Amino acid sequence: MNLYGFNVSKNQISTLKKAIIFESEKSVMLYQSYFGIENNIAVACCGSNLSVHQMQLLLDCGTEEVVIAFDKQDIVDIAEKIGTYEISIQPYEDCCTTFVAKHPVTKPTLKSICKS
Image 1 (tube, rainbow, N blue to C red):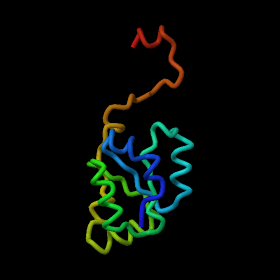
Image 2: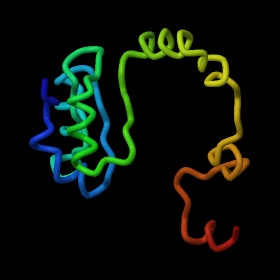
Image 3: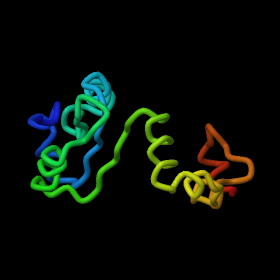
């Protein structure tokens, strides 16, 4: 089985070396409507299983990073089955919590920016 949307997104996937795999065609269409056809790196496997052939299509295109955007409960079930769930829910400091201002300004003026 092929990947839905692959023919439309393969050039961009090849350029960015990234792909997002959704379960359904609707998610691919939503992604394309949000980010535009020129930024589309989304494909759908049309189900909850990714075949070797589908993965090979992405690898042959030069994909180095794959984001699997399947249903959350399915992901949790798989993570529990393979023993990675517990580590995936541990809290961690990311760049957002490390570098965010204590009192961020949402509509700064040039004067307030220069002052800070």
